[in-house]
Picture (tube, rainbow, N blue to C red):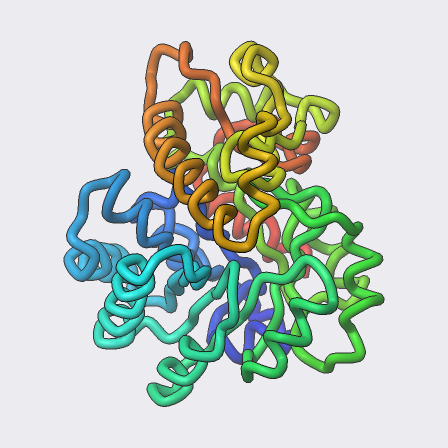
Length: 324
C-alpha cells in the first residue's frame, strides 16, 4: 500500500490519511482494529468500548492490540459535565498512554490538559472544531491538528460546508482533517485536492462487515439518501444528525419547552444535557444492536448518499488508497 505523504499521515505514522471516527455506540474493537490494520487509523470511543461492548477499558485496548499492531487512537470527550466523568476521562487517557496509544482526538471542551499529558508522552492531539473560535482555542491549547466537522457530518454536525471551513481555518497552519460527507473515494480525493491533510469517516464504516451494528441499521444506511438525514435536538440538546424514521417523526426534532428553557441557563444546561446524555446512551445502545429493526433510532451523516453496500473495512481503505 502506497504511503500518502500528508502532514497528518506523517505525524500519525499511517499509510492512508483516513480516520475511522469515534462513534457511540458503533466503535467496536474489531472495527477500530480493522481500519488501522488496513492502513488508516481507528479511534477508540471509551463509552462504546466499556458500556456498549462490555470491556474493561485496559483489557479492551489490549484486545485491539491482539488484532493489530498498527497505530490506533482514542477519543477524549472533555466537556466538564461532571467531576466524576472528568476524573474517569483522565483515567482513560492515562491508561491509553500506558498501553501505547499516542494519537488522541479531543471533543467538546478545552483540550489543554489532554495536550499536556499526551505531549509529555510524545503523542499527538487533534481537536474537533466546527468554526474558527473553537479552532483558535485548540491552537492556544497546543493541539497538533484540527478535525473540521462540516454540515454533512453525522453526530454533532457543524454549520458550514467543507469548503467554507477550510477557507476559514487554513491560515492557522495546522493539518486539517475533513469530517463529514465522505462516502466514497471520489469524495476522499476531492477533500485532499481542496487542501485537507486527511479525512474522517464514521457512517461509511458502520456499513462494514466488522461493525457490530445491527443489519437493520446497516440497511437503513444503504437505503437512505442525503434528504433523509435530519437534525434532532432530542438526543443531546444540540442538533445531532440522524436518519429520518418513523420513530424520529413520532418524537419530533425539537427539544421541548422545558428543555429549551433549561438549556439557556449557564448551570441548568449542564443538568439538562446530563439528562439527555443518560437517556440517549441507553436508547442509542439498544437501537444500534437491536436485530428486529423496531428500534429505528440511528445516527448517520449525509455520506449515506454514496454508500450502497456493506463491505470489509479493508476493502474500503484499499479502494481509497488506490486513488492516491
